[in-house]
Image: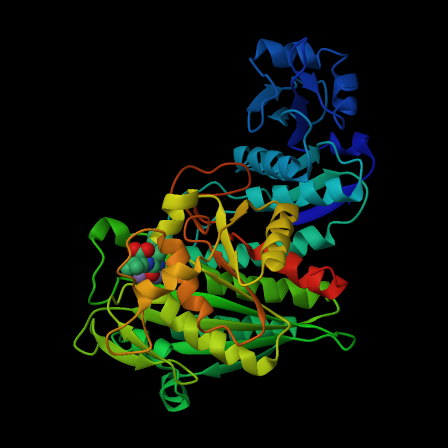
Amino acid sequence: MTSLSLDSAPTAALDADAIVIGVVPADAGPRPAAGAEEVERALDGRLASALQALGATGKAGEVTKLPTLGAVTAPVIVAVGLGDEPGPEELRRAAGAALRALAGTARVAVALPAGSAEETEAVALGALLGNYSFGAYRTGEQKSPVEQITIVGDGDADRARTLADAITLVRDMVNTPPSDLNPEVFAETAERVAAEAGLDVEVLDEKALVEGGYGGIAGVGQGSANPPRLVRLAYGHPEATKTLALVGKGITFDSGGLSLKPSEAMDWMKSDMGGAAAVLGALQALAALRPKVNVIGYLALAENMPSGTAQRPSDVIRIYGGKTVEVLNTDAEGRLVMADALVRCGEDAPDLIVDIATLTGAQLVALGTRTTGVMANDDDVRAKVVAAAERAGEPSWGMPLPADLRKGLDSAVADIANISGERWGGMLVAGVFLKEFVPDGVRWAHLDIAGPSFNKGEAYGYTPKGGTGAATRTLVEIAEDLAAGTL
Ligand code: BES
Ligand code: MN
Ligand code: ZN
C-alpha cells in the first residue's frame, strides 16, 4: 500500500524521486504557483522561463516534466497546470494528473498550493486517487503505483486516506470481472468490509428473498446460475437523532435478460453494480469518520441473465410489500431490485432515503458521461443533494419527476409496468417508477450514475479508465449534512 505523509517543511520535500509543483497561467507566460517557492529558489529563478520554453501554459490538466540536472535532489520536476483560480476540485484533479504521470516512480513529493487544511486534504485525496491502478489481472511487467507520497502542507490527511480507501474499494469492485464478482461474492465482500469497519451486516440469500416476498430481486436473479442477495449494513452513532437509508443497485452483470442487450451495449455491464459498491464504500468511510447520524445501507444484488428459468417479458412479479409489476422488458431490471429495497428500507424509519443506481442509458443521453442525474420527491432535498455533490467535487444536475410520465407506466394487468409506452425522458420515467415504491411521507433522492460510474474514455485528473468510484464522496457528504442538521 502507498504510504502518505504530510510535511510542512518544503525543503525536505526536494529529497524525492520527483517533485510536483503547480503552474498557473499569467499574462507574461506560465507562473509557478504557491508551493513552488523552494524549487524556484533551488533553480535560481530560472523555473518560469524553463516552463515557458517547454510550452507550459498553466491550463488545467497540463503536465510538463523537467529534469533538474542536479540542482535539487529530486531528479525530476513535474509541473501541473492548475488553470485560473484553482479551488479544491482543481487541486484534486491536478494532483491526480501528476500522480498518473508518475506511475513507476518510488517517492513523490507534492508541493501544490496547500495553504489551508481544506487544500491540503484536496491535494492528498487527488494524489491518492490518481495513484490508483488495477493490476489484479495482468501478468508480466507493469508500472507500479508510487510507493511513498509526501504532501507539502499543514493539516491532516486522515480524511483523504479514508475517502481514498473507500473509492479504491468501489473502483476495484467495479473493475473486477463479473465471473469473480457475482452477488454471492459481493455479499461476502460486504461482510468482510463490515467486520473490518465495525458495521452490522445481514444477508438475505435466494431462499430468504423468495420466502420474504422480495419479488423484484428474486425475479431478476432467477435466470442466473449465481443466485441473488440483499445485504443490509448499519452504522450507528450513540448521539444520532437522524437516520439515513442508502439503497444501491447491484446488478453484477446486466445482459438484459431475455430482452437481451446488443453485444456493444454489454461489454461494460460489469459496472452495473456501481451504485451498490458506492453504498458499501460510503459506509466503510462513515464507520471511520463517525458522524452523529445513523446510516443503513441496502445492496440489492442480482445477475441479470437469459435462461430457461429467467423471467419473461409479460411476467408479473410482486415487490416486497405487495405491489405488482408487469415486467415488459427484462432489461429494465434495476428498478425492480431497487423497488424491493426501497420498500424494505421504510422499516428502518429513515428521515431521508438516497438511492443510487446505474439505472438508465437515458441518463447518458441527457447529461453525458460525467454528470449524475439527481431526482427527488422534494425540491429542497434535490437542491441540497446537488449542493453536497458540488462540495464533494462531483458533477451533478437536478432533474424533474414530471407527474404526467406516470400514466405511461400503466399496465393492462398489474399495478404498474416496468417500462413506459412513452419513449422520451427515460431517466425521468425510471425515477417516476422508483417514486411509487418510496415509503409514504419520507424524503427521498435518486441518483442516476449510469455514465459517471464507469469511464470508457481516457483517464483524466484523478479519474482512471474503468470504475471511477463516482458518488461515493457525495453519499458521505449527505450523511454528514444530515448529521449537521443542514439536510
Ligand atoms: N444498466 C442499464 C443502464 C445503463 C446503460 C447503465 C448504459 C450504464 C450504461 C439498465 O439496466 C438498462 O438496461 N436500462 C434500460 C431501460 C430500458 C429498457 C427502459 C436502458 O436504459 O436502455
Ligand atoms: Mn438493464
Ligand atoms: Zn442494469
